[in-house]
Image 1 (cartoon, rainbow, N blue to C red):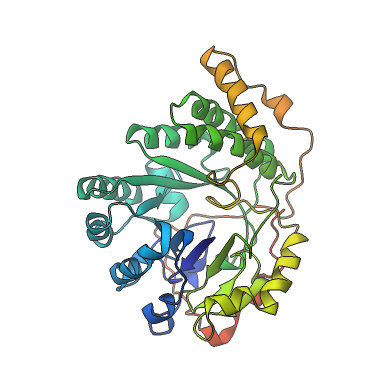
Image 2: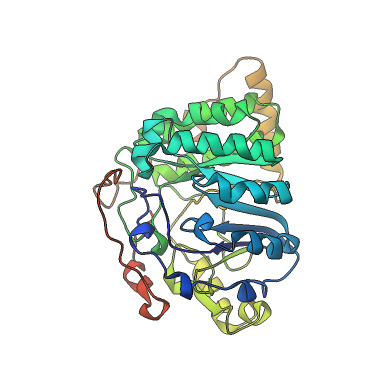
Length: 370
């Protein structure tokens, strides 16, 4: 099972696609190390995320506690605080680091509201390499503002042997906004084509499977069903900064328990988890977060192998992928809202802290994720 732990809603980025930084948690209320220690062993993948996890003063202790509980422990970070990550990389070189990067240079800084963010991330990357980190990469949210740079982001990752995970725009209670829609779905889907072609030319099998998965990403962007059934509550779950457990970070109605008051076994075997899995089976949100909807790793069936074999041979021989045959570009959904995302770089803002007792998620239950 994969588990994401949202350690905090505090964040030192000001992303246009996520407004969690406008509603930070209070440090005194955030889930404690003792509660996190209740997570079971034998997990497939455990992701420490936020907000920004490096804002937790006890991040190193949390990693020490949770690393033995999962086959793979990942830190999803904006990469702005190398001094918090470097000691972890030196002590745990097998920990995976994924730095959020939404463009090259000023493009990233504008989208993510980060002063000199791109350069700081590159400096962090170099320091992590020097510290001995063996699994590095970037995570990008594909949107109208960075579609033309997607292939360059992949090449940047390839230059240092890292990986690029790509998420589609989507809404959810975590983001405190519902305007994460594309202004031009076809243009955005077409932007994935060069990435797929480049992945197929790679010598790394993992890239080949990502290439096949990203056909589903293209369909999702166009508004078509994502193609893979969602298994939230079965194969994955998330813990919020107060210790509450959810089947997924998209729908606030899928809360299944409280780790502070229950054991993990009680939560997953309880009636709320059973009800959530039933709701997930009927879910129409069609989301595509990086690392979940299209994550390679579990046996994907025979079809991807056949597709990869055929297109690897064609790619090596110079033949292009016929994307118009693979994806129906005539089936395009209309965005339910007019995108109004704006850059917060350099703009003043006073955050409004949210408390566990406020139950703030309900207002975002009907966020649009088509």
